[in-house]
Length: 325
Image (tube, rainbow, N blue to C red):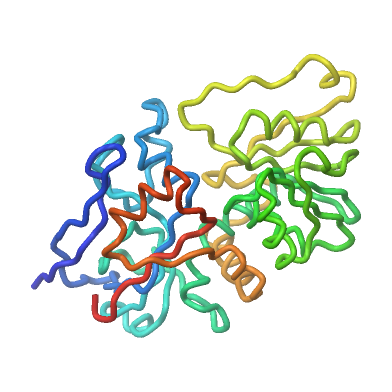
């Protein structure tokens, strides 16, 4: 027996639509999930929406349950929270997180969902995938107690990293962004804030997440001798220039990449364990500062273009699904 679901598809670069597609009953080891909320990560998802995934990255950028291929038509997304309606008995009725696109109902293997802990509201739980990226970034950055740390770029990923680092003992954490309104986010996260020109210098560690050439250059300028920039930005199909002359060698600076697709071998953690860490961190209500707007599912074809062109400002924009879908 099958039913139908509605899903958001990128039909062509810059244009999205809601399509109807079949959903079968769950088989052995599967679950049927009814979506409560999904999240739009303004960085990666708007690059996908604009058709700006380089061809040589099409394979690496595939989402776990993506349908279709880049540049379009494609069903893309990875921040989905729902309730299990059928399938594995131990999961029925539980609220779960899944790396699934924007769709009202779906069937996945039971091991592909993670139970949302008590104390984490479903709408906040859409941040799980981004906080998981932040956890991975902090593992890659390897901060030390007492470090002076800046996060350049106060978007969804950068603010998530800042929120995770805010609880690190003895650290001085400053969020740096060109948008002065991000100071309010920093206050809610209980960390410092500065615009680039007035940012604190002589930093031990800088996390760069602005996805701009200027941001990366400023991140290098903020470092103390021997300091490290951890590069989290994904630039899509853009070429950027960075100053590897001047002070780069004399101050023995380091640029280290971080990407959620891989875990440092010395961490000895599985992806499931990393996801569980992210969900546990989301018990902290400070993370609500990163949810900056809500829209109904049926408005997605009109909301995504506004998120992509910046006319709708957002960190994580939450999509709400109607009761019963």
